[in-house]
Length: 430
Ligand code: LLP
Image (cartoon, rainbow, N blue to C red; front, top):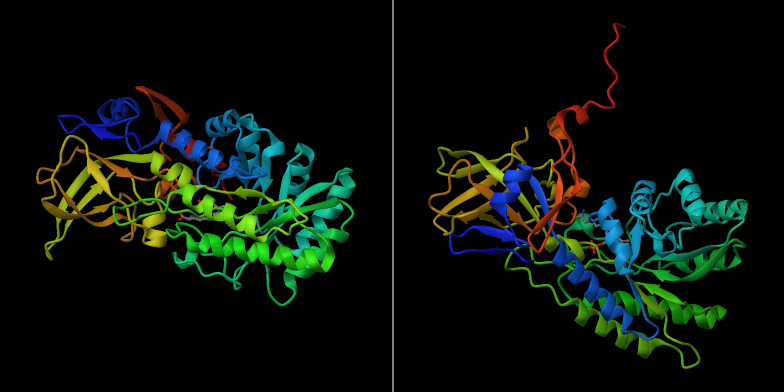
């Protein structure tokens, strides 16, 4: 993240002052640091390209996606993981090449499958036997052969919040590598006339801060691949290990560098590949670790209260509508005040929505002179904030502005009040 403070403690992001950003675009405001996004994409790309054969990151659009970002991803030549027709439409509207798109999701509707097939989506992650049959039939009807990976669950418990854990067997996602379920899916995929099975996928969860679960996941995939090779002579061209690498929301979070994770994986690929085969191509689907630390949300303090217990509340002009993560996952964040420093008073950072649970930061130390009208920057909001935003209380979603070397560009316009009733039909006496 390229944010810094100047001698007057003013905050600058991407060479643009926070004062100028809020003056131009108002608050709340999502700010994306272009340099951070490009750095993370480049590092994933370089680490995976150094594998033999070269692998590819498929950025997970659910973390953050808009037309401009799709254009940037296309310019960089990475892949893109989409999970809905809406994400696919956004990517295509941004000029993204459908051949580098991977279509995920545990329920893809017929409309979404038809749209993806018509647009030439390059790879499908098949999540169930029902979907396998449907995709085979629809690909046949469209006169194409669809390349697929099977989404498998490895039976791994990653140490992360229960809501964002997906590797265990008891999950709605994927096909279990147990009880013959995954084997049955391989048989069905190889027998499907309009599907081309290219490999396997497994994603174990999100905000993971250790290397071991990632390596255990790939080891499970490789073990499964070896078993199928012995059983059927089928060896995968691709292994997709999903996303999930964590980021530093607070100083206590200490994620391993992605290069260390990839290096560990390269080693496993070398060890497990049968002598008469070449290692599969390694695909990863990073979302959070590409965009989270690039994002900052700017708010203005609207009220400060001390309640009878002595607890102090700073309330700002946004909250759970633009960042649901604290309410949903008790996700921790840290904030900075523009123009002021110091750790003198403890206070809760609260939002403006009509819910007691609308808390952005349960407790943090603040400068002694923090006051109504100050601009607060919540750090690390680039992933799963804008994409999970709502219009609760009919509050418009904030704009997204990208900053780079002193320039700010709108990536997504802010909603206006009239946008909120755009789809409403007027009352007609009944
Ligand atoms: N691939 C698959 C199949 C996934 O399900 C996900 C995330 C990713 C890749 C990207 O994972 P990442 O690198 O971003 O951790 N809303 C939650 C996170 C949900 C993650 C869902 N799947 C949050 O705000 O923490």
